Length: 111
Image (cartoon, rainbow, N blue to C red):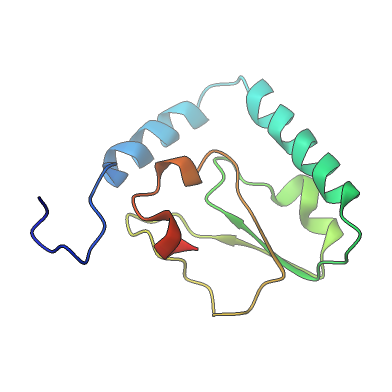
């Protein structure tokens, strides 16, 4: 049982996760991220809506290069040890993320 029943349990060690992500970023293989970027592009192409303000939330390596030209404003949410987004409420039309949300301790709270 957690000390505070109103807080989400800590399932993932964010410091250890960031350390592993930094180590993985040094590897030259990007085939998996390239595949995810292609899939995200296909999914966005199928949506009949224009998104103006978008953000990349914690994607290792970032999505800036392939997606920045599709939006008026494209920001990268800074990675931190806290699972809170440093973005103004209701400031985005779209949030993109790859390989990040599966490691969030409180996904509903983050969203």
